Length: 97
Length: 480
Image (cartoon, rainbow over the protein chains, first blue to last red):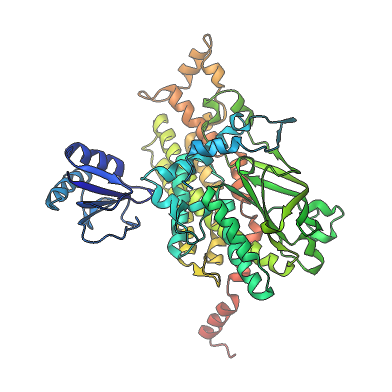
């Protein structure tokens, strides 16, 4: 089973609903295991920051592909909300997780 | 020891024997008392959030003393990033509670004492810093809530502590022995103290040699022998005894819940004493605490303002005037003011610098600018909210009338605004605005973390006027 790590910023003033994004991913990838608070044995790590300040503390891990969602951006590329969700799914597929 | 949940926190309060008085009676089972419950609920949120992955990046951190995961509210800032995260944490929690959640006063007291005790030891050869670190570890490992107890009643503000006709107007040491000290006096405006575990006492003004009995900093449990708390009244507090809708923010209340705490010859063991007679360091402690505490207000008050702005926009929508250009402009102004406050707190945090103890301290000038702005901007934000929401927020009949089988239908009919919005929703948002923008909340914004003149003293002291005059002379071609 693919194990996908999830790390949030603190959601002090979020532009996007990061929990909604996570719920969408869980529905789209029911065969993946999404975990928070644990960074060993991960296939991939998604960092959800509520805005483009992207201040979520990065865990010290090596060799794990990271997808960074920060506000309406994924890996610093901007999208509308509908495209954001589609792109996130594509990125998760494309990271060979 | 594991971080407490909100439920653990409430259970831990039940183990205390805190003496609390309100409305002429000693309160029994205070965790269930409707007067106090909203404040307990707000503080409990700070505990629950430590277990929620959405928020833990702000609410938890690694202790520099033990390497363990701790609540940020018991953390000593190790970087400017820590200072920034503190502000973000406060804004985030305030958005969810809509009110003060009380733990920041103790948080700031811990940080002020950390660096002050270090510097005291360096200069005087005392051992306060190590003693303080042991107390800090105790708080961190047990995840305790500590009230920051600075403000004395002060009596005649024109007289120094040692000149007061009543020597109890400032807390002082009345006896020292081989086991510890005995302190006497009171601390005023104690936010969250009735639902805290510990209190951290500090002097409230700079002191001179004559005032040295008043130069005392120490920690004690809030239920120590000789400690009594008299809970302060707030506007509309009796509504908590009546129902839900009329409270506005029924779950978390308004402001932090403040008490007058009496200290009647209270014993404090030496291991919990962090200043005793070193009057020359009282000013440093006060200034550091005040700066850390003023830093907060662009976090917490912006978070509260976020809720007021949302409520105001909803009120406009429910009234059917959301598209009016003057309404939009007022909401824009509210956002502008709130984000200006936030910007100030982020600025004073980003400009933070290390102390000789290694902990990080905010830029005091910018921190005082933040609080000075809060003393004005919150009033304007509230005024604009009243303007947009309309006069109905001051005349809504009671919840009992709204739900009355005979006359409720008139309230239902005549307090309805646009179609598609229930009367109850309109009343609820009106009550939220009424209670969040009322007298107690405004006065807290004015005087919490120091009254406006206190900031103005600091603005002049820190404002580098000499450098500014040199700049002007240089450009004006005035000879030196």
